[in-house]
Amino acid sequence: MGKVVFKIGNDVSTDIIYPGRFMATLLPTETPQYAFADDVEFSKKLRAGEILKGSIVVAGQNFGCGSSREQAASCLKGYDLIIVARHFSRIFLQNSINLGLQTIICPDIEADEGNELEIEPEYVQNKTTGGKFKIVPLPKARQAIIDAGGLVPYTKALLLRRMQK
Image 1 (cartoon, rainbow, N blue to C red):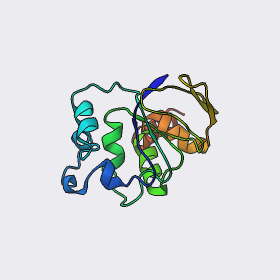
Image 2 (image 1 turned 180 degrees about the horizontal axis):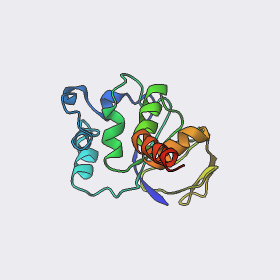
Image 3 (image 1 turned 60 degrees about the horizontal axis):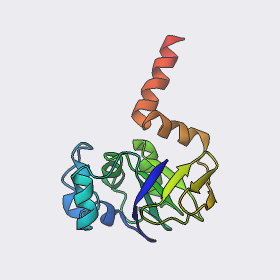
Image 4 (image 1 turned 30 degrees about the vertical axis):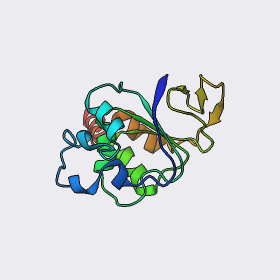
């Protein structure tokens, strides 16, 4: 179960998630400090450690549109946020999978900041309002990458298993 700590609308670009002026910062360990940098209040809470790991960001359609910058996914992964959106842009979704960022596609999600959500394999339950919303599952191979923590850990584990045979 997680708490919705931030709600944002449709067409949230990678420039909103990770502003372009910080593109010189590439290390995944450094990118989180710039997550939602232009939303001063939320950014301050993230940097101050006021947002717990496993907290949820709820978004509308086309989350992560715009440029293909991987930093937009890595800055969110750095806080171990869960992103529940009605729809993700294709490139952002793939970057998220590669980095192991938990992304949930939930086309009918209805939740506000402060709501408690329980994420099950097939649906998201809003414990605050009682609403239950169907999830569009990722293909098993993509979910396996997220579950492993990203493409690098997934590949390492796969290679280790093959070497042990």
